[in-house]
Image 1 (cartoon, rainbow, N blue to C red):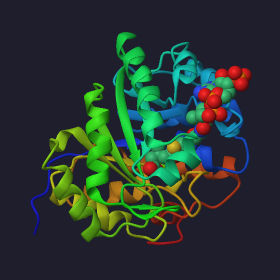
Image 2 (cartoon, rainbow, N blue to C red):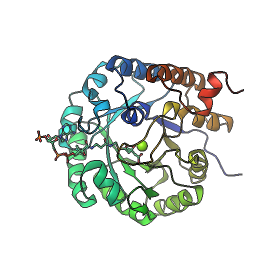
Image 3 (cartoon, rainbow, N blue to C red):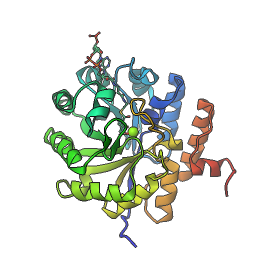
Image 4 (cartoon, helix red, strand yellow):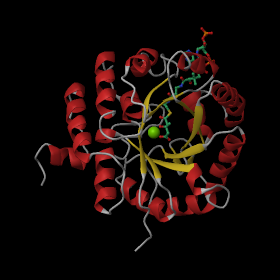
Length: 302
Ligand code: HMG
Ligand code: MG
């Protein structure tokens, strides 16, 4: 049996990664109520929204309004994605605690997602990182398509290391490694982390698994075996990237909690409250969420 950590931090990305991928625009008041409910579940980190171009992601065009209106709890970090200086200006109008910059390990997805080559992206992100740090914010970085890209195919771990080195050099404290299209399997996660951990410390890394092919929890187990203790997840298994064909939901927060709590790993989060919040957002979205533990909460599974 692998050595397991005593506790894990879960970073809830449902309001951002989840809602950015919904066909319909969720009313601003409903988003605020959703995030306020999440703030009551024991989570200590919520990615609220993103300050990308509203033409590219109209679902989150109300980012400033949402971040200003949520009831902030003092022990929770409220974060948002920021792609460039214009996004940072908008973010700094709000009380956002942490700024997350993002780019991909593969050229194809980077270009489709943020309209730049990898090399063109670094100076843009550097400006955001410097501006955010001097405004007293912490900065997180995402690297997408760390295993596979919908445009370029398999991505080598050494390519992820190269991008991560450039991001850490800017002063970012943590990088979240995204299997954006949910293609990874445990042996690939194993190779990726073996390579990354030759260059970086385990507490500098978080994992962000999409569950397109049902491998996310298996990939979490492999990550735990490498000592990773930070995972992104989305309530109800919401999520996906509109610029990565085939990307579907993130690993569901409630399914991840069930796994971790069942193995005796603490998170500080109430599974029951997360399930109840998932049922609430399911009503607002008008569609069935497909996580296992939402089905249990509906009474369909025992
Ligand atoms: P661009 O069109 O190349 O931008 O978009 P630009 O710099 O050429 O500017 C064009 C115009 O847009 C200018 O206006 C700017 O002011 C304006 P004009 O002078 O023509 O009037 N503009 C903006 N307005 C508001 N907010 C802004 C902003 N930026 C420029 N931030 C950009 C480049 C990055 C903005 C665009 O490509 C974009 O918004 N992309 C969105 C990508 C996105 O949100 N994808 C999903 C999130 S990433 C993800 O899901 C993966 C992740 O979950 C991890 C994983 O799963 O792997 C994080
Ligand atoms: Mg994602």
